[in-house]
Length: 511
Image 1 (spheres, rainbow, N blue to C red):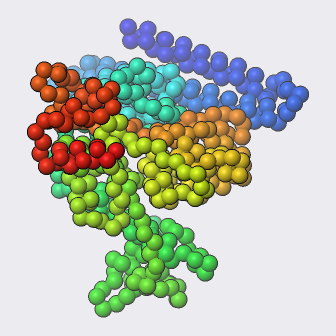
Image 2: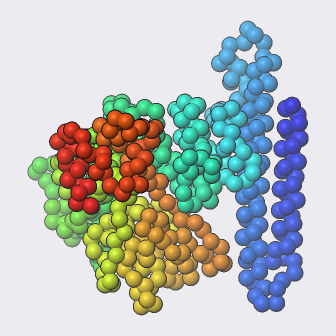
Image 3: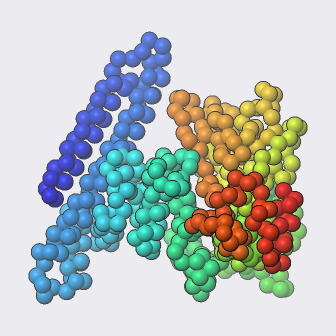
């Protein structure tokens, strides 16, 4: 059985290589069209790269299957009296020597291969088909490592099974960079983890720490493990300070200014006011004269969106909220941010009927603040393929230019970071149409189309107190089935209500 599987795997690899050779022969290195030979060559090279990527994925699947099968065989052949730890060390050492990698890397490969072969059949199948890369497979292994079999299967199905009850929308997992896929997989995992995010956050907060590590060239690195709301607030505060220090006479980058502002604030005592960039330690790293102290910096206001399901805000459910630039956070953290009126956080309530706000449109060129906030919430980041630039740093852009007849409505707007905004206008990348809930896709100068990433909006979960009255039936879903069909919550709010439910009734009535 095992040998047959290996033979089939080799046959698949051979077919992939043969197909790749055919693609090379048919690319721009063979017969060229009479219209634009250089364009044919460029297009052929892109076809080759795509074919190589698929072949590399299939080879990675074969390596994983071989490593997992070798480990099983070696364990079966080991003497009964050999300790388990010694067995695993011997297996990792053998694989490391064969592949010329260290024991640590060999152990990681064996662990990942075991997970793919025994727990993640859809991921292994996608790897064998060449639709996801080895990096994507590693992300799936990492994000399902602490989940039980059922939860891991649900996460895998959401991203890799188009027939799943609630499949991921937008760009397929294998067509986005692995680091972007990790963000989306982590977000879905946080929402659907069998253990409450509140419970896991309490445990995680006990491990908060500040760490120091020396680096090369007289440098060192500080890292803090903090609750997400604190970390995001600190990051945005120093980003805003750094922006306030920028100007025509400032030659430091935003990254350098952010680091200088952090060092100045951390080392400033009550009796001194260290300037960002000044020498702040005994090393004598020269500072720059003429820069204002932190207290004198005109700091731009940095607004971070906190997307909160209204039922969660009222304390009727414990659904996670979404913190812009981070991901899911506990409902208690979101309620505290809203209740305390934190200056840098901007609350966004999610309509409990469909999980997303309504379309906002306008007939003038300039965007309203509400439109900018909704645009940030829809896209979550720069809409260019693979970009992770957070929404606070991006620029609103008309997909169809205003002077070409484009309107200033959400469906004709996208947000781009400064780099990709320049790329759009200078090189010829073209956006595809957007909707109120979906970011634009992109068409490259070569004509290839790339789908947009979309946020996995989900209807909020309704508390049982708001479910149908006795005799109207129940179901196992996030909200009553007739709720959306009826177009309103009247039938489900004609029951005794707590103060929180009264607030919900008033909120829905204003919609």
